[in-house]
Length: 313
Ligand SMILES: [Zn+2]
Image (cartoon, rainbow, N blue to C red; front, side):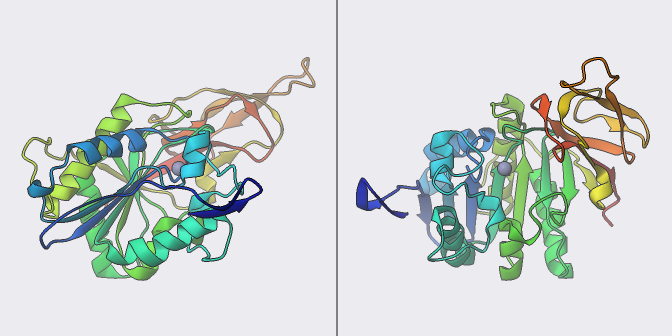
């Protein structure tokens, strides 16, 4: 990525790309490091990049293990160069900020090559996530069927359909890919800006099953897919937000089923220590997808996200 600063007028920032190609066949694009403080996917893809022999594959695997490289280098969700959140600036701009340029390159150069994209995320510094895979529902029936098939092959413990109503909307990679007809499997693998072995194992086995399913790399060693629990997020009422500043004391862990009205925890006011804390309750029934990781909370922060079970037929 070109960069022109006080100390590097004609400089560039290297963003690692690993391309492994052999013969004819489909192209899988595997991405991590869209957010720099999400680690399971970064490590899983570096391992994969080291382990694939070109002679084993039919087609092409493009691995971008640290897509927003400045954010990865800084261990941050957003880029320290422009404070840009890569999954909120798609389709990007050719002559935009650093982060917008990366999004533009993905939209214009990478996505048109892809038959499938896997974008590996985690909760980062602010969230703890139930490991899960996400697909963006498609208005095109055939593409929607294909997305459901692929997410079942990926087979995270939970899969959910979301149009980005909790954040992102039409500014995400999945939204840009939908316009180009490219299926995207996004995964959330843990959180708290740390590494979880379980999340990395889900990413590694899911990616290997997808490569095998697409005929790019037959892999007899990878475990067969488990049943995945299908869910969706119908709307904003499946999120609970902080209505004032305070210290968040969650009552329920991620991955637990709750009912509407159930006690969700407390928000303690650090400026009014003798007042009782605000008692929180869940706005809907469902499975806890994520909760806020840091205790210190500001008005407007997301405290919980919920998912609802669906049947997918
Ligand atoms: Zn992320």
